[in-house]
Image (cartoon, rainbow over the protein chains, first blue to last red):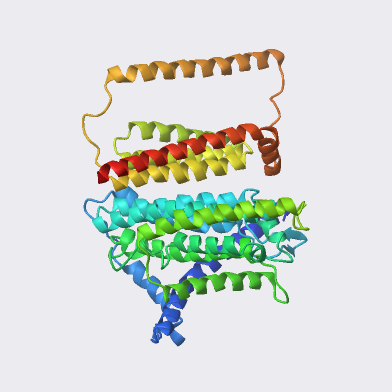
Length: 337
Length: 174
């Protein structure tokens, strides 16, 4: 067995593991959401399939797979079939740049616990997040249904509103870490996580990623009270499942990104790095579920107002203050070169 | 390997652009254009310019095309109308100009190739990947004034757009 074969095997094992963990986690996140919401609303939640209802995700999967695959008559067939994949793929791809643990040594090799340490990792995330909206918009448009179309338009309007503030809230992170690479950003937070220096940027980023994964209070493109189910009204079976799983993968990925940018990534005392990363990421997932059980939905003009007139100016002011602070300190955090 | 990927991507980009022009349906045309821009971004990455690749996707595929799509869906322009395809006469100036630029490109390539063959020089070494810090230093230290001028120009455009928007609103209320 040559050296390169070992490398390839290690890499393939890493990829397989990541896929398995993320997909399983996404399925159980649905279960966790139903349980937590039930507790918040003083119900029991799913408790029939398996012990404590733990096999519920499996039952859901079988249900989705055996449902009729339905395409509306006047729908744009190709785009209708393509849209769910366009929504789910960017979510999974983004995980490629997230460092989820300290590098470990296997078979004499240093294996970094991330798929690809791009030197433009942060921009890669922003690029994929702006691509992801095509799935929503095209799915809504191709369905040839008024509810879907309205959902798709709202999805686009939502992206335009939060994307700028999300990007701007990450600028101070780059200024502090002096790198776009996520591994460097985590390394720069070995002692103090950036949330201590940048509470405002953290808040803006948190609001923006809530809008990004279309969760209450920003579930405007779905808005089941007004638009039936918004952009995925006409979808059934596994195509709906792909939208659905994509949304939960997005929650995990965005939680992981918030952890990486502001909470010090996998750094933490006593526990193993991977466990720290998972704990922080799942805390974000819990936070999203908790918000869903607590807050009402915004109107989409309210979201646009919030994004453009509140978050964006705040983020710009934050960048300015950070710049002045860095300039007055002479240089920077001791860690970066 | 990289060459094969390059030719595939280049083919996708060219075909995508041609389809974007000839497609009568605006939503489909936008998707073809996004495909083309995406493959151009990957080509930039192959040319060891990941920064440009990322900006290509964020700005063009992610922001501008999303705005186009938003407007088309919002105004419900998704119905291709018959008979608005340009006539031969209208094609002619565009064809002539495109011919000039293609001819000049071909001339440059041929002359380069000829001179390289004459000198029997080895192919130029691939440019090393430039660290982002170097790019930033060049941009903001060496060309700081130009960057400021461009940003001022964008500010003018912003103020102008705001003025036009305000005015039409005032007209409506009158």
